[in-house]
Amino acid sequence: MNYWLMKSEPDVFGIEHLKQCENKTEPWDGIRNYQARNFMRDDMKKGDKVFFYHSNCKQPGIVGIAKIVSNAYPDPTQFDAGSNYFDAKSDPENPRWLLVDIKHVRDLKRNVTLTEMKQHADSFGDFQLLKKGNRLSIMPVTEQQWNRVLELEKRSPK
DNA sequence: GCCAACGTTGGC
DNA sequence: GCCAACGTTGGC
Image 1 (tube, chains in turn cyan, red, blue):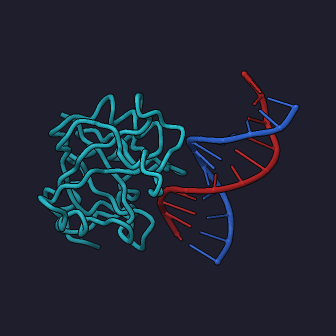
Image 2: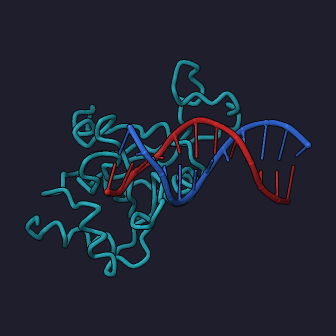
């Protein structure tokens, strides 16, 4: 099993939204980045665990845990001319963009913030999230990094 | 194949 | 709101 981190803007679709979805499950559409797509296509498997990260907000950080409940399949929004995610260059016979379904598992007891993780950067090793200029919306997380976040969660907030 | 221009992301 | 970093596009 693999671990992942997926970003979302809470003003657009936060963890509160995910919880309210039917069966707490939602197709993660709109990913239009090849690196992120390749992770979904090649490495992500049903049952993998996901940190749900809030980006582009006052307190960016990891706010919850989700899981992957489908393998990758074509993102229907790429063929919907009315969608913001429409891609005229994507061939229905060979779809360019994929998605996976994710399901809410639990909220973290508190927001484990980006600031806090940066303060403990040494114990995270090589972590995409902590790199300057990182814009990847789906990234792998090592087991060590996963456990480190859960350790931080147990601490009382600063 | 190079690279400048452009649009987007996302922390601050 | 600013702007650095990054990915994509398209002219050449």
